[in-house]
Amino acid sequence: MNMAETKIIQTLDKNPSDYKLLRYLYLYRVLDSKQIVPIIYKVSDERLINNIVIRLKRGGFITTSKLDLPHHQLLYITNKGITAVKLKYELLTEIWDERTQTYHPGYHTAAELKVKKRFLDHQIHLNQFMLNFQKHNASNYHVNWRYYDEAFISSYQTIRPDALLQVLNNDYLIELDMATETKQQLVEKWQRYARFLKSAEFSMHNRQIIVLFVCDNLTKDIKIKRRIELVRHTIKEVLSEVMPSNFEIIVNCPDVILKYVDKQISTLMSTSKPLTRTILENIGDNWILTLPNEKIEEKLNKTFDYQLTLLNMNKVAKVPLTERSQIFMVDDATDRQLSTYSKVKLFNKSFSYLEKKSIPFYLVIIKDIDQGYWDYYDVLDTKNVFFTTLKRLKKFPLYKAIFRYQWDGRVTHFDDYSWKNIIWEPGYDPRGSNVIRYKVKNQK
Image 1 (cartoon, rainbow, N blue to C red):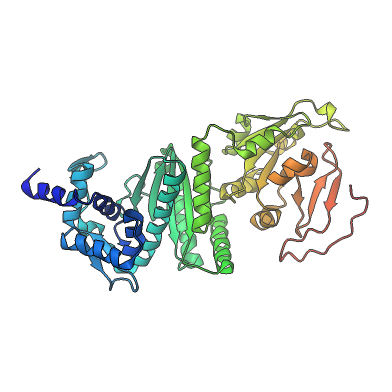
Image 2: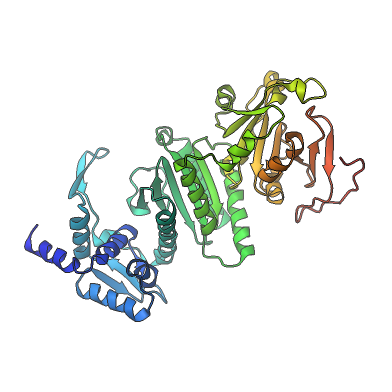
């Protein structure tokens, strides 16, 4: 360590929180002073925030700008600040790149971290999403994670998401949406993902890939909902027949997506059983939870969350059951996972005509009956596919808990385990489906 570097360390050691701010600026490239200073220094007064910024700016560790983005005081790290980060956190001076067979600097320069003016608003929103994730992580599970901005992602070549978040065995590809892309631009984005899913690069990946499409920059609920549905529609249009089992897409607003990530990480780290599994294990009527049938998974080139198998059909059925009606392949789609839509669409197509008599049933657990109708309305004619909710599974026997949607949104369930006689559920009307309410006779 030379004299200049020693002086940097001595200066920053007086305020250890300065290191943390510089590290955040190095990681996220640019931050609003009101966005980051209160988090690190635990101050909210604007005067105190400005004093901290002025001190670091005079020390040559950061630069600021109030002109790049209106109503924001943006903070950028300088090369002197990067030197401090390198010394404090022991960044490598050089790294070996196997792909190019050359040495590269082990850290980025201030010029490389600079964000173009037209991308600043997008970057600030993306960084806020990650700051919220860090807050959730610190409060709930304290898991190690790695983050890469779009400009510095090296583990993916065919696609270029806005950011990559790696947690445990999951790669979260973050697409921060500012509601500016047109439908055609969204289609083109998913076409690039389709090429990626068919590439050798994807086939060599052994990590679970989850695309988090974060719909941001909208305030009205109706606009958020419309944007989410437009994005989901383009994904179904392009990717529904090419989504493999180790690839998932979640589309929602920032808060809901963070809850999904929380749920995933908590499930991976927890020693207790997920709620869905606990409910399925207590179905009763001789139904047991087993491992999914590998032959069926291989045939569909898909994996399933669970399998329900009937142990003794003679005890629960009024008539002899076929082999296929003793098995349900089950998926938890309570977070509106788009991979489940793909499975519903392809479930019967993967079997030949002679195999169709042995196709098992497919049960999709959804969060809300009304929303489920719109999520699957264009594949409701797929045979052997049924739906349910966790609430129905807890309340009713399986034959009554599962249901099918009719084309107009009405719901039917069975009256026993023969799976033949159906009961129409009265009074159910998905918003906007123009269902005519029918009086139901002999309702059980």
